Length: 522
Image (cartoon, rainbow, N blue to C red; front, side, top):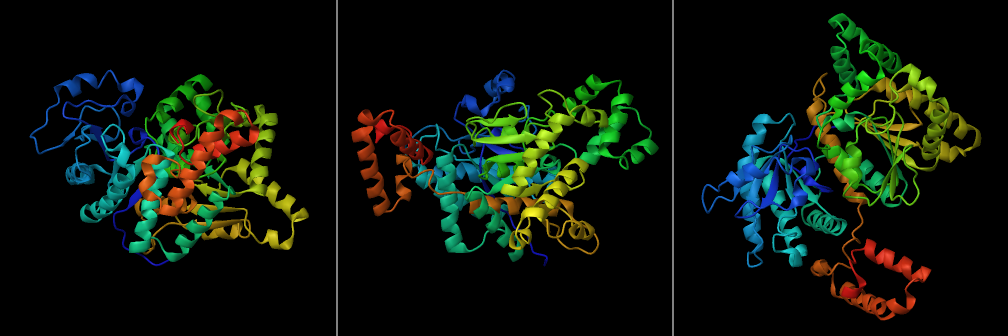
């Protein structure tokens, strides 16, 4: 892969900006510093009241103010975007410009990313007064953000709260692509892979496998760093800490459990380490990508946090049943908030029957779907055993053509030629590093992975979620508007007589998935 120069980028995701790890983010307010309750996580609502009451704008012209008293890890800038419908779209865009102008240099001094990451919501489309002009606002805002990332050399995550707005923002991005060409600074090879995977996701063929690397952007350690932190808490010497990394993960867990005085103490310390309030950009990009199932070895609940705004019901296996869930997440090694964790060899042996059942689910996914591995180093012995079982099973029953098609794609930060050879034919491995002699720029490679996931998300996203939402009518051409109005008129005319009819209810479900809020508004 050739080296390329990275410019600022606008990521487009669906999620909750207040729960996404950024360096700085735009927090909508008004002249009197009133905040919509949903912007403040419940556990922080009381603590922010006094600082908000004391806040003052420096002048009538200045409409952004850094909120230093915010208890989260990401720094919000309060922004006066009011609720007056008489304001022009440019008035809202000016507040975004002020935010980026102030936050960019502040974040650059503190960020550990290759480029600072700023968060911007769909300004003005909620309580800001422009909800009836969502289409125009979302399109203008995306175009404006493209200019800002270039001018200030930052990354911006454009975060949409609901499916129709997210689809409309992707539509705006599609039009920008038609006008300006590719917007991802990625080699052609990776762009093609991202497009193929995105198309598979749109067809329902993709499943996500997440390792500890996905959570690093949220402030959590890698697996080896995690073990080292536990070792430090257990009082291991420097020599023992170095030796800990050479142990099998389950043996390391057994040792740490004994040194820390038992399972309860170990779990309490793990809970303390994993207690972060915000998910990473990778979590949010993956949660926004269509898929019915995901698998992880992680104990944390950050993927669940990222998925809250995307899916109505997420089942976490094996703790929940997957009945009627829009999506399910299989946690192979347990969850910090539910039941026991699988960390030591004793845990692994104790849960033999459950382990076999869960391994069967992963085997089925590997055989029936295409698995994308993110933040996972392919070193877990349990997973390698599952993969070997699948390999041998397919070798006995699968045609030669199917055998030549890898069952998964691994997105890696750094290249590992020997690992490529080990999994050749089973998995496609794509390193994200930028060649620079013998060194690997981890921060740059991590950013490239985010760009890849954003490109994959773009190619996976449907543009239908806003079709029947009247506030996005400006995005439809005359033929589309005519079709929409005729169909809604037909539904309105027959909804009382067909209420409860299975076919009619399926139609209503489809319309609601495409942006219809209430058939009475048709």
